[in-house]
Image (cartoon, rainbow, N blue to C red; front, side, top):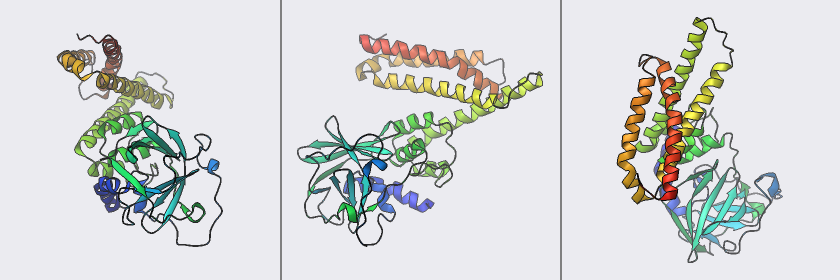
Length: 350
């Protein structure tokens, strides 16, 4: 996929959702279906969607198609037993699907992603995606109505448009960056062993667009979050290399596999502690969070001073400095997380 195609996708994503609904809107940017031809056998649903048994389409979703406007100029969607159909004004594509009741509507479970819809007063509101166990919000919601006049092809005559996903986290990050969802992008990026390489709908690290291209196209908030995590990753790599080099200089035998394992463990624990602390802080009631904010800021200052002090035996440009700092912050973040959780349960400020 070329850079200009990704730029168009990033620029048009919100408009596509607002006019065409949420169901796999990006796939309409590439040929959705083959040219018309004879009917083909419909493959077994279970071979493609393995999250669970096929569930019949809910009566509330079945029947006519759904679109923001009942016109062939707008993308439309139709839900049938075992399938989700997409109509782009000329052709119909199909993807295996099953359905699950949600809080205020339905989840449409597809291969590699789940799409969440609320049904309110007979209209279908698209709320977002679940990809790799992460919720991603669209740039703007879509509200769809029943459209009986849209000419969908039968399932047997539609063409499969589901694409495989190599790494769900890379796919999830691609979606979060396209949707400018900074909180989701942060949660996803912190779970990834590496951000380098391809960030795309195929989840393929060897394909374009790469992380640098996506950073140039996403919002400044998302880019700042991702760059911060990249810096942490790079610091952890340098620190691990330095620890390994120092051990060798002292005559210690360092197995070849120990450095990557050490890096992975330290980096994962550091990112996990930061993520859990941030999530706990965000979960506080707004009034409580406001009351505790001065104390939280003071705690952050104390933590940074303490951990910089513990790392002071190394020069600031020595990679081991960062490793020592992370080792200090992990238990402090965990203690603070537990403290905030207790505060949330008791409802009492500091």
